[in-house]
Length: 226
Image (cartoon, rainbow, N blue to C red; front, side, top):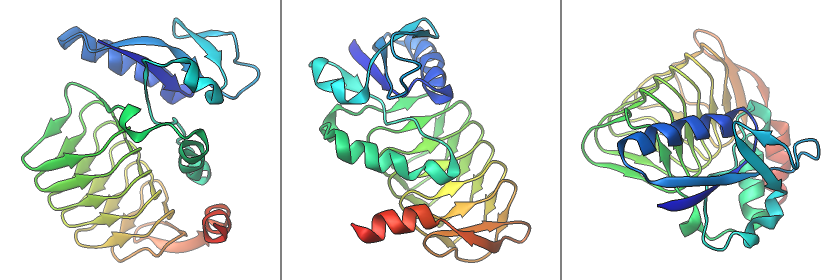
């Protein structure tokens, strides 16, 4: 059984406690120690029955623990996952996947580390899923899809076959990405959108069919400066 520290005590952190409960009901795998969070108001509090033990930069105090990915899910703050992982310097091997027991994997699915995958998500065949990704309830990832790191797939999204999702892209709830298109890095696809053609890096698109409505300027300015 692995000692688990949850990075982030917000809504998704609480979701992790529920998924771990389900995992442990099948096979005891994780013992949650508590949360680390940089919100001053949460420090010392108890959330979902577990303590908020300190700020994220205190992770070295938990020498035997493994960690979740930083749990950020806001479209225009999704870049913070990469910033936090980079700044903390936690070895990649210490991040673990938290995967609901009822997630369906067909054959030849490659999964990285630090992913959170929620109930009833479905992965078809020959899929590559990178690391530090969030895949929400009832999402479907079609065959031959490729998802890079730090991607967010919101609930009931449909990623059809052969789609490539770039680093840090955010796919809104109930969206459909039509097969063999691509969504660029740090792009944002609005809730309920139907994407029929490629979305460029940093673009924000929405609608049916999806059209460009803006740019993720925060992520562009941050990552093109580095």
